[in-house]
Image (cartoon, rainbow, N blue to C red; front, side, top):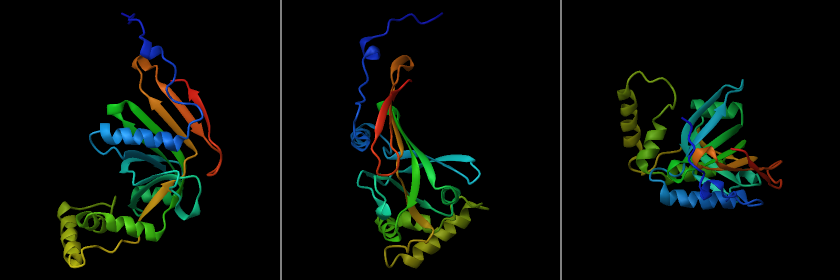
Length: 222
């Protein structure tokens, strides 16, 4: 039987996503709401990369820098920064194909943001600064890991963790491995999405040509 329940006023309301908005400012507004309303890891995002021949892969990572002022190595236009082991599968894909897509999905808020654009690697100084801002345990865990490589048994990794811990406990920090670095996505496309009942979703897409280009925006059909 088909659903003949009348649509309510909220479903029929006009878009609440403003035309001509600054997408970075809108992101800040939504991210602040997520930090209050999303219980676990509001900075978690899906990171999609592709190999040199275009085979896609996706995983969850944590956002560690963002905004219009996020400007690594003199690249204009702001961005979104994350850190990783560049010898991992994702790191190898990034080095082979320096572009990516991000997805924030805040289920509790019924909102999501999709972001696409090229990547640039952060400076060694910034990678050092962030690596050493992490708890000592996290530094040890990262330095001891050959991320994404085959592991015969878990005890091998745990033994490495103990060795790295003991070697650097006196200094209270671990030297950053050269392959542990960060990347900033410089957005060329940002889409904001609000969930509405009966799939009458509210979507606005912002697109720009180049890192310093002006943003153009439009509503999208759900």
